[in-house]
Image 1 (cartoon, rainbow, N blue to C red):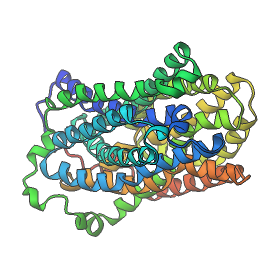
Image 2: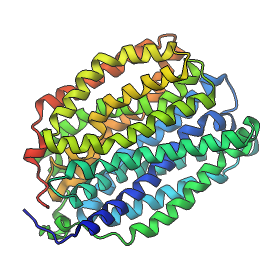
Image 3: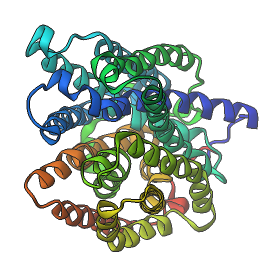
Amino acid sequence: MTTTTMTPAARIKAIFGGSAGNLVEWYDWYVYSAFSLYFAKVFFPKGDQTAELLNAAAVFAVGFLMRPIGAWVMGLYADRYGRKKALTTSVGLMCFGSLVIAIVPGYQTIGVAAPVILVIVRMLQGLSLGGEYGASATYLSEVASKKNRGFWASFQYVTLISGQLIALAVLLVLQATMSDAALASWGWRIPFAIGAVLAVVVFWLRRNLHETEQFKAETMAPSERAKTMFLFVRHPKATLLVFGLTAGGSLAFYTYTTYIQKFLTNTAGFTKDQASQISAGALLVYMLLQPVYGALSDRIGRRPLLVGFGVLGMLATWPIMTALGAARDPWIAFALSLTALLIVSGYTSIAGLVKAEMFPVGVRALGVALPYAVANSMFGGTAEYAALWFKNGGNESGFYIYVTIMIGVALAAAVFMGDTRDTSLITED
């Protein structure tokens, strides 16, 4: 085992530095989804509300399609040249994307060029986010102490959820201070400008991060690290397990965090303000519970949490979504949304750590990022589009079945894997 000289204060500083950038990256990513109710007409001016949201969701999905490429490129880069360099590069790309969205003219001004630019920018941001997940999960897992690795690594999703919460908070503030007409006209650009500024701050913060001791102790030459074929030839089981866990986990996560806001307005009939408030309240509690679940995994293991997510997710998805669609009381909708998120926490609190613990240091960032990004693009990134497609076709309950089946895939992966708390390949303490 590699022993480091990190003091508790230094470890906390490293966790903060690694996760702060994660927060900004995910804020920038979620702002698109949170404000799509307002800017969909700016880029896609024709059609009813469902059709406009469908077009906006399609662009959201296109961004996800770039994530495997970003995961591959940045995963190789992080394993060969360091986690710090990969993290700094990814946040720089996200900053550029947010700035462009904040200033690009709409369809009525520049015609078809507007949605084309939007697609290109979202592709760049997808490239950035694809690299962020693997590098961030690897960095946080490697700087965490062995005894409390689940607790510390859970802050990846704390910051991820924080990014979404901040995006929702900005939305709530703008909804309270601006008219719907002003928000739809120009106010939706404000959160993208905020994201660009925050990303610049984090870019400089990440430049001062310390590289992990385990990466610095790796003796293999950079050119020999993280060869893509090593991932599939030497670690096929771990690669497939990451794919399976992510397929169900990410679909459930995006269903109950990103899509749920649209579901509450488009299906349940809540106002935009009510849907935002319900989502924000549920996400706040959800965020605070991630370290609790992470600490629990340090005591009882990672596998029980993953199995719990799979079993409860399969049993509860249909009843929760059906009840949410019929809910008319905001408090009932809040309770149902929170219940779903409590189930998903069994996956999200330890998702990055479990994947990192399966791979050796020379291929760890790539091993975490690439199969995750492929599965996330196929299932997580298309969650909104799939849900709206089912609704547009008059078979909204078909989406509930789809989510249930994919959670079953994650359950199968959890059943067939060992407990990574006991078999971890992270040798640093």
